[in-house]
Image (cartoon, rainbow, N blue to C red; front, side, top):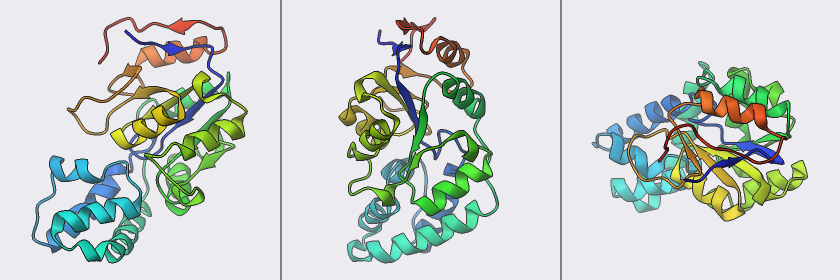
Length: 231
């Protein structure tokens, strides 16, 4: 059984679907686009796009919908639709604010998101999390967003932390791949049920008492062993 280290030097959080309930905004936008092309949008289709950048998601949609040359146009439409949905507001997911505050009290924290800066700022502000993060990193600020490791490597470098002594919180396979490639430990709260996701800790909510216990132990060294089997 793997564990989360408490001698962690930094904690880096994904945003969409992990800290903030923005996936509903993305799903509304994606469902509308699929419907325009005569296709339903369910679990299978969501799995194609979750965790990806706007551009990568649009390319996957274009391939699935049988219009591979329309990725650019679909990206523009997706961004516009998500912007509209997100303007209505998005709430922090259960336990997010408490866990971020507990981690920040002990070690540096940051956000590494595959959303563009525009949407990331709106999401964090809407959820009341913007002031919790002195540093955040968006997909359009690096050359290679997730699943490449650059976002996580940039975050760790900025925080002055070794990736191998840092923890990432993620909700999707794309984000997990990026964190692993950068060398971080990974805690996972999946946005989609099912699937076999790589993890050091796996739970159903950031409000899990195990995470709060782990956060309280940060900086004391050692490792926090879950009280129940995970994964």
